[in-house]
Image 1 (cartoon, rainbow, N blue to C red):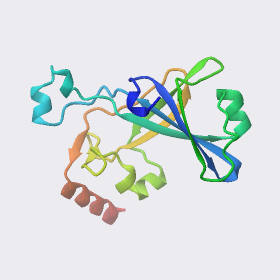
Image 2: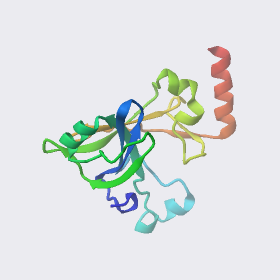
Image 3: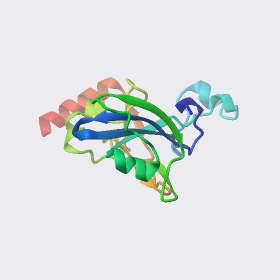
Length: 181
């Protein structure tokens, strides 16, 4: 299965990649509906009843590394063909389970970024699209999104009452934070 064919709520083990330490990194994808998504253009607002204009879930990604033998035991996925660091195999394994429990990607939005997140806010903070405006919490804090793979039902945390910051405002607040800090 391809990522484009995923339905909301379906989890996909996309690929396996040989990484350092003789580990294999699995890439997971899932389309997750954010209840706080809303149309951002006038076209979207004036066509909310037309399903062609609905704001739809985009794939979210998460990565986890493990041992070849343990991945085979837990998920039934054979990664033994990955011999050299950087080797990748496409998997397309839909709705994986471990001991009968479904795997899901869990999204947690927070204003409490790690030290790395805060130091690299320009690439780690939530944006409206790849290079869009920052999405800020209702009190103007940057939002950081954590993706994890969990057993069973995910308990998503989506912040509400968010707002876009224009580029100039984002730069000003970053400068103010740097001066104050």
